[in-house]
Image: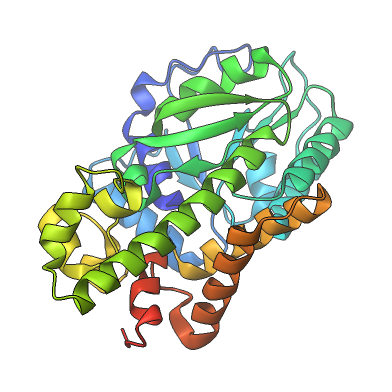
Length: 320
C-alpha cells in the first residue's frame, strides 16, 4: 500500500497546495522515497516511470534514513508493519534532522496501524527533540484498492487543529475521507476498533458463504442477496472471500487466489493490538479474542501472506 500511496503523492505533486514558510519557495512537492528493501524501491520507480512521473527536480530516492533526514524534510510520511518499526524509523530520522531554523519543523505522518500508547510515546519523543516538530498518527482504511485509487480513509490523531490543517492537504492526495479523531493516539485507537470489527465481520461472511456452499446455494446469488440485505458490509460487497462471488462483483483478493489484499498476518497483528488494548483497559473482548485465535491458527498453517478473506478456505480445510 505504501508504494501506491507514494505514487499518488507523485502524480499530484503539481497541485499540492501545501505551503508554509519552509516551502513557500517551492510550489511543488519534492518527494524523496526510501524503503529498506531495494526491490520495493525498484518497483516504485518502475511504476512512476511508466506513468511519466519521473522528474529529477521533484522525485528522488534516499539511500538510508540519515540521508533522508539530512534533506531537511518538512513532512515525513511512513507506512510500516509494526510498533517497533515505527519507533525505530521515526526515532532514526528525528535524531538526524537539522536543527529547525524556521517557524516550522518536521511533521511526521505515520499511516501505520500501531498501538495508541506507542503513538503517544512517539509523539512525545518527536516533540522532545524540538517543539517545532510534531507527529501525527494517521492509520488508513480502504485496502490496496483504496490506496491505488486514492480513496483511502485516514483516521487522524493530532496535537492541534493547526497541525491537522497542515497535514490535511497531503492526506487528501491519498484519500477521500480525512477524519480528525482527537489528540495523539486517537487515530490509532479508532483504527484498532475498526479492524477488530472488520475481522469479526469477515469471519461471519466466510462462515455464511461456506454454509451456502454446503447447502448448494450459488455463491454469486448468495452474495447478491447479502448485498441488498442486512448482511451487506465491506467483506461481502468489496472483498468477498468467495472466489466466484468476487469475480462476479469485480473486486476482491479471493478472485486472484487471495493475493494482493490485506494479509492474514497483518490482521493478526492488529487483533493482537486490539485485544491487548482491551486488557489494558480492563475490557473483555470475547469476539475479538476468538477471531484472533482463528487468525493465529491460519497464520501458523502458512496463510499469513494471503488476504485475510482466505479464512473461508481455512475454515473448510481447503488449500490455496
